[in-house]
Image (cartoon, rainbow, N blue to C red; front, side, top):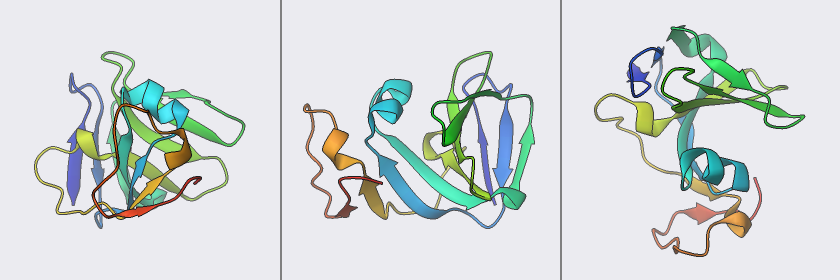
Length: 125
C-alpha cells in the first residue's frame, strides 16, 4: 500500500495494490501545473482512500485534476470516462518501489531538458 499527502497534510490518500502504468507526462497542462513534467502512478479508483477534501479543476472536456485547496499541491488526474485515476508520485510518503515505464506527450516537453533515461517515449498520450 502506498501512502501520500499534499505539502500541508490537509489531503491524505492511500492506494492499495501499488500503481500501474507509471508515467512521466510532459504535456503543457502538466508542465504548467507541476512546474516541470508530472510523474504519476495509476490505479483503479476503488483502490483509493482519500482523506480531506481535494478540489477538482476540470482542465479539459475529458479530464479533471485534483489538488489541495490549502497548499495547492497537484495530487490527482482523472479522465471522465475511466474507472482509474492517476496520483502524484512526488506526493508519496517514503519509497514507492515503482519504476518509470513511459514518457508521454514528449512532443510538448520543455526545450530546457533532454529525456535520456532509455524509457519508452510517446509523442502523444
